[in-house]
Image 1 (cartoon, rainbow, N blue to C red):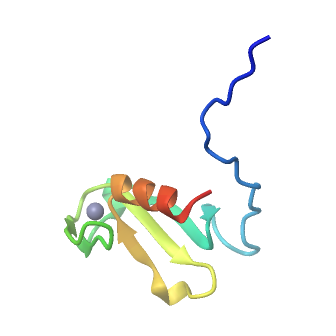
Image 2 (image 1 turned 30 degrees about the vertical axis):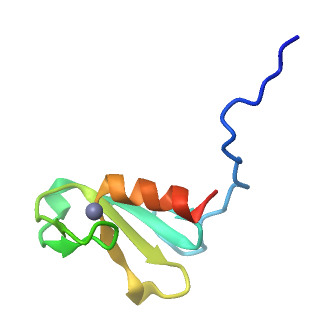
Image 3 (image 1 turned 45 degrees about the horizontal axis):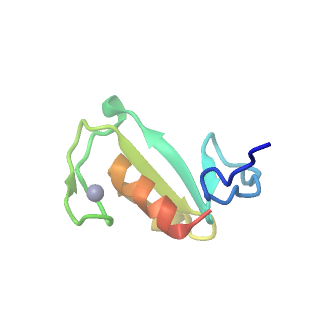
Length: 88
Ligand SMILES: [Zn+2]
C-alpha cells in the first residue's frame, strides 16, 4: 500500500466563526470577508504589495478579531499569500 505524504500542508483546526460576526471565515485571528466588485466603491492600499486596490475590483477584507478598526483591504492574491505566511 502506498501512503504518501500528500501536500504537507497542515490541516488547521477548524475555527468557529466569531460569535456575532457576519458571514466570513476566521483565519489566524482575522475575520476574512470577500468584497464583490460592486461593493468596492473606494480604492484602498493593499498591505501585501503596497499597491492600490482600485475601486470596482473584488478583493478581500481582513478584520482582526480583537481590533475591528484595524481592517485592511487586500488583493485576493496577496491575501492568499499572506494566509499561507500566517500559516495554517
Ligand atoms: Zn496586493
